[in-house]
Every structure is written in structure tokens, then in C-alpha cells.
Length: 151
Image (cartoon, rainbow, N blue to C red; front, side, top):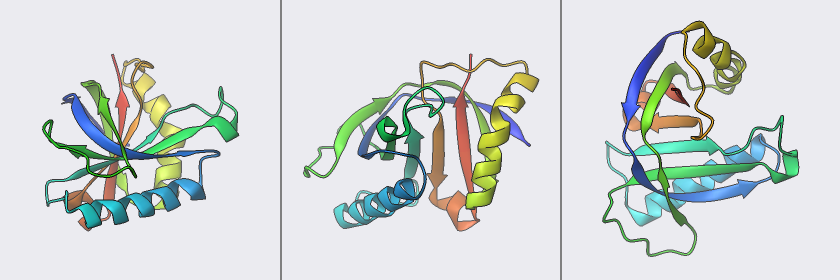
């Protein structure tokens, strides 16, 4: 698995949240969120969508796990909808894994990324969430990225 270390800057996001077991509901939320994004006309060819599993299901009951579908927005972006919330992502060093944008590849990556981080001599920074990052360019080529915060 190929990994690059990247400094991701802090950023402002708008997001929708789903609480419950990870899985199909995350995909449904992402579809709903993409519909909102398109209707609000806040995207461009440079837009970045993030999927964030906020909780580790090994430590949090599945019914309490939170998943956020997010869009990175400019600092001066004003939300005109009660369908989304506003938040921030803390910047820092991330191990970035580019993977095929398929359910199988994403699942396989989740099974392997922690070993790869360890193998690279890095430590997981548990104060920041892991990001699934989707850019227009990557998705058009059937790829996405998993960004693991490291220290």
C-alpha cells in the first residue's frame, strides 16, 4: 500500500451527521449530503468532500457511532440552511493512502492502514479524526484517499 505524508491545513467545514452503526447508512448520508451540496451550489472542480467516522466501534457502541459527511468551505462561507452544521478540522501531519474508490478497496484499506502506519515508524494521533477524502479529480479517476493523522 502506497503512503505519502502530507501537512493538511486546518479548515472550516459544513457537514451532516448520521448516528448509528457504520455501513449502508453512511452511504445514504453521503448521497443526501451531495444532493444538498449541489442544490446550494457551493462546489467547484476544486471542492473537497470528507467522510469522517468520528468514533472507533471497538470502543463505542455501534448505535452511538457518529459519521459526518463534510464539505471544506472558505472561512468566510455563511451557511443559509438548517440542514447542515458548521465545524472545523484541525490541521497537521497525515499519512495519506490513495485507494480505488470501491467498497471493497475502502474496506481492505481500513483493515491495513494501521499496520502500514506502524510499519512506517509513525504513531496515530488520536486527537484528530481519520478522513476519507474525495476530490473531483480523484473521483473522476475512480480513486479516493484515506488520511490518517500521525505524529
